[in-house]
Amino acid sequence: MLMLYSACIRPARLNKIAQLLPRNAFPVVIQQSLENRNLDEARRRTVLRELAKTPFPVAEQRVVVGEPPARGLDGVDAEAIHQNLLNQMESGSASGLDASQP
Image (cartoon, rainbow, N blue to C red; front, side, top):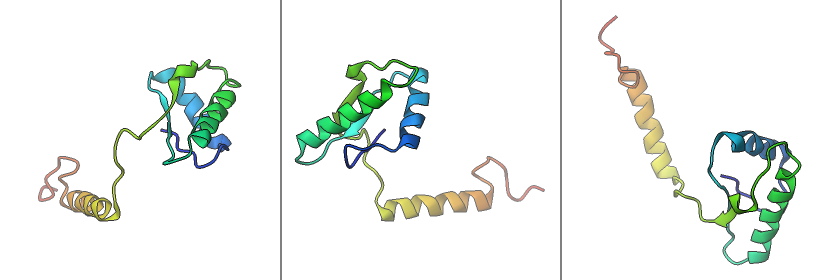
C-alpha cells in the first residue's frame, strides 16, 4: 500500500511499487485524507503519471483512493507482539524445535 502525505512521491517507493505490479493484481491504494479530496486526487494523479513512465502499463482503475485494508498496530499491541516473538525464539517454539533437545 502506498501512503502519500503530499502530491510528491519518493522515487524509491515508486520503483518498489512498479516492480510489484506485474506480479499481482492488487490495487495501489492511496490513503485518503480526512478532509482534502483535492489532495487525494492529486496524489492519485501523481502516482498514475509516474507509473505511466514505467515499462508495465497500469490501468487507471488500479490506482484508487481509500482506507487501508487493515488497522495498524498501536504501540501497546506492537510491543506485546514483539515480546511474544522474542519469547518464542528463546524457547525454540518459533522454529518448531524443542529447546531442551541438543
